[in-house]
Image (cartoon, rainbow, N blue to C red):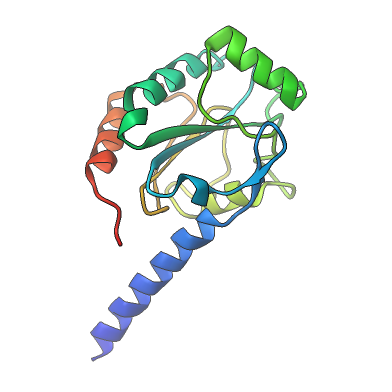
Length: 181
């Protein structure tokens, strides 16, 4: 009986965590409040971005992933951040203009947020605490992959390109899995 109770507790706590993640509010680039619940049932790649970073060209690869897998229930969500070397100094409007003009970005772009330290946005606090390695983000363009049920499924370092084989394989595996009901 003890094993059964432990298993039920594990299932309930996992469901609560995913639910918690989906209910953390954040702002879109235009200032509207939303949550990951708006993307429920989709595989989501969450990325902290910056316009003046050596990794900024990754926007191109992120857009390619979005276009390639978007019709299968995949999206990319960018969260600009000025935490690393002050490489995202612009306003939300300037960031949106830069992304669309320079890289043709059409995936969802959110308002600039902190992803480090005491001021870290609750979304990033959750992401960091729920996938290995459990440590602070090291730089711009760190990626978190969230499955269709709202569970953090993977984390990729900033150096990992959006089209890296391990990223593509994980996205395809998650897209092949139906959401739990």
